[in-house]
Length: 314
Picture (cartoon, rainbow, N blue to C red):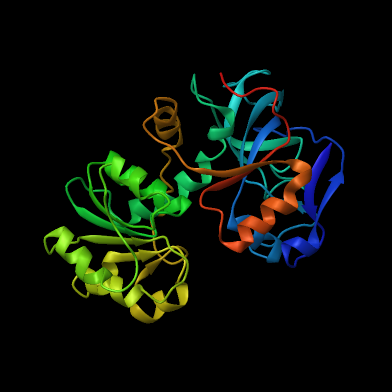
């Protein structure tokens, strides 16, 4: 089978190779799928550069969807031929989801009616957004500012917060502004005057802030929006500034038990009540195009590789 892997750490464009490797067998508590779609994320490039070091070679691609074609000992909740979505065992296997076949360590059945390509957009964005929101507090009727709501994680976080009854103010550009408004969020622009605009839109009360934007030097402004209390702000990106300001961040703060809402929001996606924008889909062999777009910062949504497109819906 084909698998996108790296044998040494470094810049992804330099160390990743599309190789022919043996098809792996699923171990105890694992399943193997024929991969329909594999989502790519900045975390994949961070793995190439040495994040969470492990035995090499390693693959990339955490978010996957596809058709079960082998089942490991102890697995009783799926059968060969079932359509599933979830996470590849990227830490325990020499290949990841960016392959013709992938070993999965977490999965759910794809809800009826959910397109398999859309299904592969859900796991990581949902997990990341839900984890950070849970750390801040998903309390109905509170007002939260989600900064960078046009990003994949930000767009996801807005929908989660709205589903939990929160009042959401979102900062975003024009690409997804109308879609964000359709969720019930109030949308405003980045840039000069943002603090004043957000305070006016909130009626003077913003309880929490989730920063999902790239590093941009705005954390002091976000702290101002919540009345100067840095513990009400959490960032997924600007860890250096967070440490200086006392702002909460991904690797320092959060629930010890990772909350799991995958099944709930996959069903919402199947029902048309939740979605993650797709920026582009590419054959596995065209991975360098997807990489280039991702590294450019111009993706405007989820990028996916499609090793196998023979099945798309339940």
